[in-house]
Length: 307
Image (cartoon, rainbow, N blue to C red; front, side, top):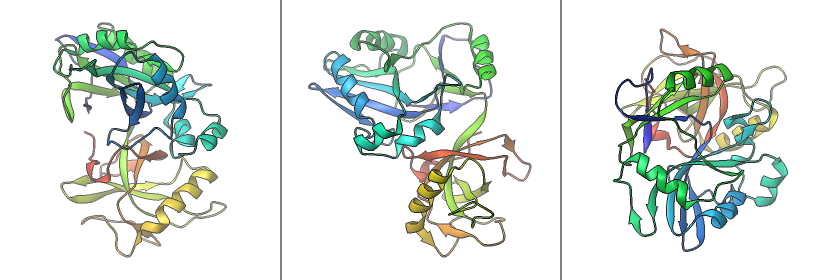
């Protein structure tokens, strides 16, 4: 179940409000004493987060399917950081994962199945009560805090701290597959996924590439949204070049419309980047975009402009 972007907090009705976390969505299948982790597009995550698999196997009571978010906490800002999580999210070797030194937690916020019973049709607030009972929580396995009032103050505090924002969910809502207006996300900053369609050559001391050319789908056409030239360190540039080199192509993947001039290497629209930006320009391009990381949990064909 996915949240719909909203410009402000909802008014009226019974809602619960959770902190918006900047991580990777994860479904937990704890069945028969073993645990499997999957991303929102059902890619296996067990090898990327072996310590969470081990911890969950010890604390989930009975058979259950749970929904949550894997995060890395920035020790200085004490906030979830997608950029920090990127240092290990691409790895699938336990030894290499440990060498990064990046610790992760999983914040659980929903329960879909418990001890032989599908509870997706029950109200959210009841599912949360089940979720609280079927897991023994600790430092790395966290019950996502929520409140039923004081959402405006919660959002102000989140934005003042530089956090992501707030997620509002109808207390009586069932769990459904896909994006729903019963779950809303209210962001403090502009941030969303974009499809990578090409890159420019490096300049100055930078190596491998200069800027990523990104876009989003309108129908079946990929629309160009701008160049992303900041947010990279040397390991990130190396990783991106390694991922982009095999998918180079002769022609741009973007549909009709203006494209940047100069030297560009075009690539097949397969990789999805998380990008932060200040606003959209009147020409429909990103202002002050910065690269935050690659997303492995969303197909390129699903990327749309969030409005």
